[in-house]
Image 1 (tube, rainbow, N blue to C red):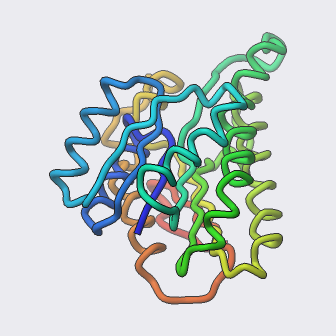
Image 2 (cartoon, rainbow, N blue to C red; image 1 turned 120 degrees about the vertical axis):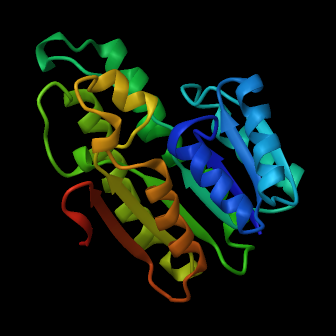
Amino acid sequence: MNALITGASRGIGRTIALELASLGYCVSLVGRRRETLDAVVSEALAAGAPRAVAIPADLGDAASCPMIVSRTVESLGGLDLLVNCAGLSLAGSFTEATPEQWDKVFAVNARAPFFICQAALPELRKSKKPVVINIASVVGFKGYANQSVYASSKHALTGFTKVFAKEVQPYGIRVHLISPGGVATEMVKEMRPDIRPDELIQPEEIAEIVRFLVTRKGSGTIDQFYIRRYSGLAFD
């Protein structure tokens, strides 16, 4: 089985990649920095991945989306699982947001998953067990002060995932959306330095949900997982 994970150089994406490696997946790891990705490649191979490849790419560049998929298929021989995890954060008042900031965040958080899914669809249709998992956020359902641009991008990703799931249902592709609250990553530290890491969801908890989704047997098309530290896991 072959998996493509964006945002795989750190945080949630890295943890998911290593979890999939432990399940025996060949993994294609996408991130911005080659040296960081190379370190995760070594970790993935040590965790049990039969093969691991690094694909440095700037998801803010629309042309990178088809390139990522084509290089993954070229390197691994196919695609069975796509995890869109890469994301950019932005904290600040709505009144201070600029068009440039909006475009930068939306390019990575909403546009890239959209067009990676589009490019991946022909390959996923060839798989016997195709799965897509998009990592959104609790802000894709709720609103928090000083997160207007970030929340807008995650609302867009959430809406796209719901439509995408309906459109690929005839092909037997399972689509899942995971919407965590605060996770102990560098991104959250940047946005909310006032929160202690031990009060946050750990990346391993998200990886455990991914493990459940890819190992379970079922014919469900879309599941929404909304997870917060204090309220536990709820299914919507």
